[in-house]
Image (tube, rainbow, N blue to C red; front, side, top):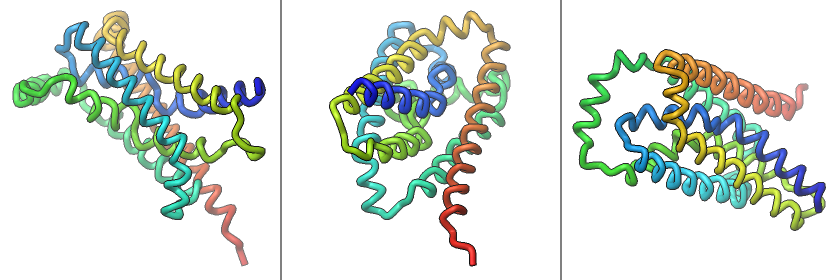
Length: 222
């Protein structure tokens, strides 16, 4: 039981944490709500954490059945998820600096002044910014790798513990993103976001390559 618990926790945390990338997600969320008060950020952190927990739990638990129903293989899922992650990282790399978009940001906020923070908590702040298609694809892929000897209490406990660790990291990063931004400064924050974007792009390329390798390996050359 202990072996299943540790193995499950390590598998899920190491597999999903780099994809979710809570520090980068927190900085992106912060950039979309720059004028939010500390109380509003705390509320957003709670809502985004809860939404992320539900999405990941559903993906891990019934994602494999959805794949089976539609006849989608794991390599294809990895290629699709990798492309989505790589595109997201590339788009973040190509985004202009904050000083180039201040006017656009203010205009957007003025046009949506009646929209509450709560209504943004699920879309777009949770899906697709925090737990996007890439994270869902990886969660489904990991969910299909359940122990071959059958599910055990240790496995279920490991899934719960891993989700708690992941969601706790999301909550802490989003709640204290403002302090992190002040610590880095404006220039440091922009540099950090570019670095995180490059890491996301590399993760997407790597995931796509793993999927392509699986597809090529399944082809029977004549």
